[in-house]
Image (cartoon, rainbow, N blue to C red; front, side, top):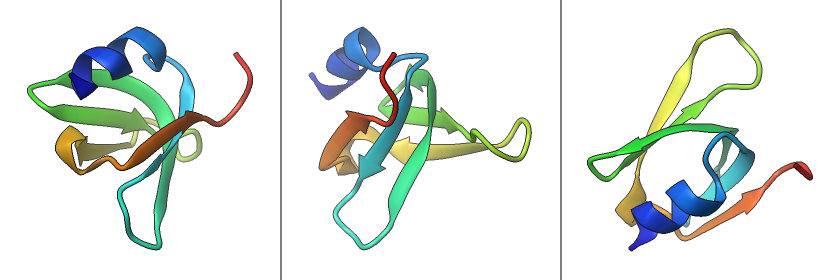
Length: 65
């Protein structure tokens, strides 16, 4: 369910993700497969953060697209 929702509304958008801790993850939702969301960093070149979709508590668009 979450994966389909992310694919429909957030792919290729700049997002912020909360997984329930004090840290927030920011980047462009680049790929979503096998329960993992890959965020491309907006700074620093071709670097990615990979997040287990089941751990996501909240996601929102960072900028208006």
